[in-house]
Image: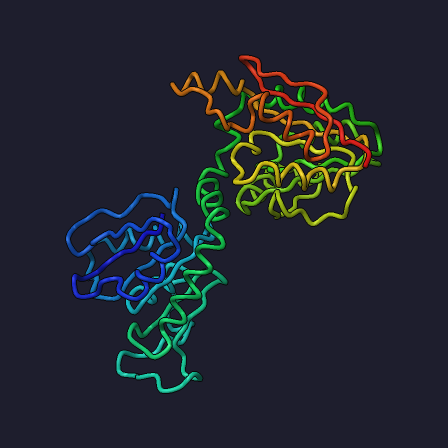
Length: 345
């Protein structure tokens, strides 16, 4: 969802709204001037746009908090006019640092300062109605569309990262037991894809020993930060990367561990192909969750969908088609586990 914040009825989304609507992503407008409440979090948000107009003190604290949350989670942000000043304030509290022009200054050529770039995904446009502004809007809309899937993931996990282990303290022994089902040998190389706070890394290190290589990959920087704070960076390398585009050569690892990730990816088969690419022949893939897949669905009052990627009828053919030989499939009340072996080409 794209969130737009209006400060006055006179400043509607107009051109930027049209550019964002063209992405096909849902757009929600918060009319702060009419007393509408801003979202409390950036959960589900793929972009945040804050328009021009007087703010007074109405909702200012909430807007700054939302902007800071968006910046932390790397949600694409565009501030227009007043929104640009709020964005700079949310980033570091110093609007002057970013050389924002005065109201009286009118841009006249491409060398004039019109676009403020706080981060690669957070932009401010001081003048709303300027030549070539539509080009800025189009580029921002393209950025939003291209990153939507990643943004949703990061928006969800960023604010939960610091307390993630506290919420699931009982799962540690189950992760350890699952990791040992990989049957890795000393000196081998193993990757945890979607490692989160890295709680399985010690168990993987225990198997491959000091001569082995352990790495954890996650898409959310805050999760890797939490893993480092727990001391798990000492158990293996922590890498920021996309599960479907791993920065590893073919056959680089002897095993891939992944917990609770595959069915949340937009293209599970693409992920399985990528994990097969980086795994040496006879290497192991282990998919895990500390509760059963069918049991979780029943607990939430929903049936398993016919196209659910983790059901046996869907997962086993997908594995065979992407270079894996399924060796074990368990969907028990207290865990889900799939073990597969990389076929030799």
